[in-house]
Structure formats: structure tokens, C-alpha cells
Length: 152
Image (cartoon, rainbow, N blue to C red; front, top):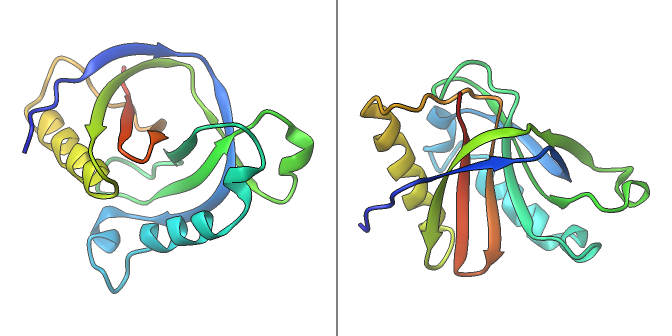
């Protein structure tokens, strides 16, 4: 596995619209109870991603506690025209500091590897601390994506 060195960046608030599920890691690590793969299947089968010229996002929000609690995942696109997004879930990406973990390679394996790196990184008690407000995956191309982790 390639070592991923995160980069610190500041993000301005923006909105994403799409489809959502509520889950937790314990359930999503089990293929029989996993909700996130089905969410992405539904999203990719829908016409949402073709409605606007926007990258695709996977947004993690409404955290119950930390990485062991429940959270909501929204697969969606950036909102450009609010009137087109009336029947979809909306989430606001909080402005603030984020650590960016790049994921190069085919997905979903590249994103899964990035998340494994993120969990290992934060288990080492780095100088940055997660805030569990909003985190997001940004899919630029089929082989280039990144995970943005909100920090204090």
C-alpha cells in the first residue's frame, strides 16, 4: 500500500444534493448489512450525476459520535441550481480546515485504501484532531479522488 501524506487545506462552505443512508462502520464492514455500496449503486443508476456539471461527492455527516457511531452518507453532486434538487437530500459542507488524503487508482479500492490510511493516521494521535462534522470524498475522475477530513 502506498503511503499517503495528507495536505492541509481550507474549504469554503458549499452544498451537495443527492441520495443518503444512515449507517455505521460496524454494519458497513459486513457485506450482508452494508448500506454504502447499495447507495452508490442507486446513485450511479440515477440521472443525478448528469443533471449539472459537477464533480461527484460522498459526504459523511450527522455523526453520532466518532468513527464507531452512526453517521449519514450522501452520494451526490454540488448544488448549482437549487430548483433542480427539490426531491433530493441536501447537505452543507462546513467551512473550515480539512486534511486531504489523495486516492489514486481505480475506485472503489482506491477510496477504501484511503480510508484505511485515514483510520491509521488518526490512531497515531497526530497533531490534528477530527471534528466529526462533515467529511467528504471528491471524485474528480474514475482514477483520481480524495478524502477530505474536517479537523479542529
